[in-house]
Image 1 (cartoon, rainbow, N blue to C red):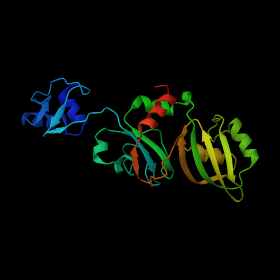
Image 2 (tube, rainbow, N blue to C red):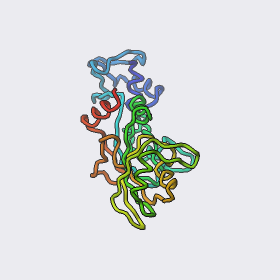
Image 3 (cartoon, rainbow, N blue to C red):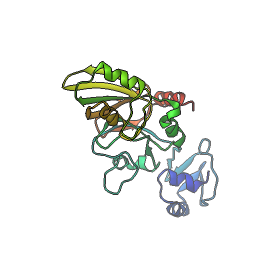
Image 4 (cartoon, rainbow, N blue to C red):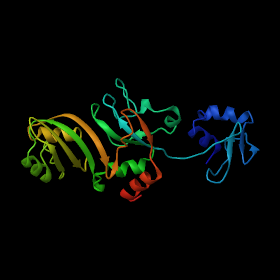
Length: 239
């Protein structure tokens, strides 16, 4: 990897700014001053320092966020604040993006990364990665609804959903449920309940596969995935 690309990827500025930094003589590779932006380095073997501080290079970043209501799951939006905008500058330099989408008013587990291969596999219907949601429903959810969800329901556009596992936590004029789906159509959970004449009034994603939302994360907070969590996701998607 070229030294200018490595430094730019780690947030030391644009390629042009990095070239200026290199000219100052404050960048060293294996303790030798470097001025050429074309120098190739091995991030795993070579020691790179800037102003005497070691650059710990890594290619990918993996974050777990407890998404708050009110933010859109996108890298940018012309009129709405996005989940990316609340990240710290040291995380923004990796150009991460949300894995899949949660509706603006939906809360809960959202993965954010710049690993396109992992993101694609987590969201691919072929991988059947279950997403577990908690929801508050206006209307009485019944065993009949469970049966319908298990066989797939027809959405307003004629699409028949894949089988979904519905668990009734409490039932009445207002019901509480958990739902596991393996696909992610637009507003899918809301539209599934509309298909059985009910309305979702609150929605929160709890899990992707068996990776659960960290209960210590308040809405709007996030942290890096642990090595164990990342290993689980890679095994889950056969990476």
